[in-house]
Image (cartoon, rainbow, N blue to C red; front, top):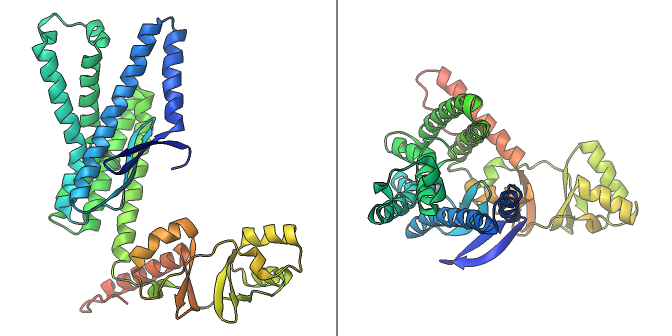
Length: 369
Ligand code: ZN
């Protein structure tokens, strides 16, 4: 993630802190000082926020270390002002494993909450007459409340909260994952609506949370649909095979002409049949300004992706398309196709149409094309 500072490694996982989080710390300290608080109170406020985020790190570590038991590594854990984010390489496909990974985070909060509760009980905090002011002054009590809040909030059965994954994994034990995800996403949207209405009357922050949940539910459902529909497909099933390409020595003006005539956004460059790289529209215009019309095509190459094998699975190819948007498909050193997110969408759309038309003709078996 950009704009973050590396704090070091914990259990082999990079721990990062977003710069916006440092602004939050500064804001908390300044606002309590400006409100007339003493330096001591301002420091306690800072300490509270830092302790809160240690709780968040422990929560994320709960997910990461459970995933590790199933052979899934975590790229990094980032602290954001809205909470933590553990970037797991992938979510386990086995619903039981997904359940354990998802529930591990909230369980950490439950455990720490239990310890804090015991500590407060033993020290006699609960045996005095409690008032809101007293609860507000005790750092440990505030941390206990924070833990309970984290626990409950994360168990709301809605994506992108842990509760959404817990629900999906439980449903997946009984039905196919896409259906499970879509039911979980709909329940999430219902929860979002409810939280939004509550927020409208009581707290504007809840409205923001509701929007966050709604968007999360939608994107999770569509990601599950994509995953399911490309299952078993190979790169060659979704690649474009009709496209124009240019020779490395060809002048840029002819590349521009070709780009205008064909409307092609990505133009592969080859030299004697050997693939060199890809020129995107933006790169082409930049190179024309910098180097002029007569410069060779290869000077405008913006991306030099390694390329994919035609028999690679489409599922494995997706991450590389998210960073590069276009990938050449190469067989024996020869460029045989181009694959983009759009070409995959085309293929999915086509499959969907085929399935629908087969559904309407009874007696036929719905085969994948
Ligand atoms: Zn979590």
